[in-house]
Length: 110
Image (cartoon, rainbow, N blue to C red; front, side, top):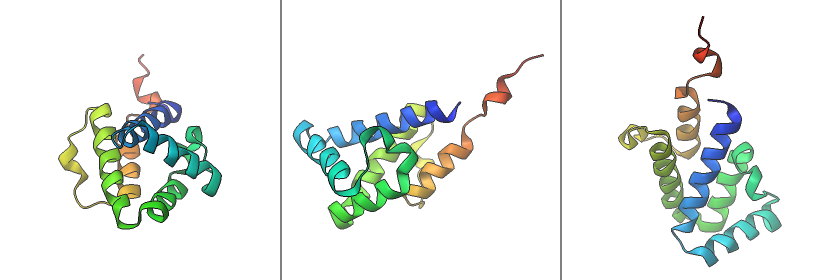
């Protein structure tokens, strides 16, 4: 899977998880991310560390709930078992998923 495809799936997981709060709260969070933290919606996947810090700044300890929702959604979209999340934090979980994805060159047939 290409990095671009993974980014699209990660962004979809973020948006779906934020939508669980309702459309207005989702839009308010996305607006706040852009205006206060300079993180545009479409750039969340490549700025995942800054996104995580922004969530923690906005929600404090409540950010962990959203992070778990995002990881659960990401795992579901990729067909992974959600129990494999274990005790990893959000960034570790995202990086673990990236490492588990097959690389494009693995699909080359002779």
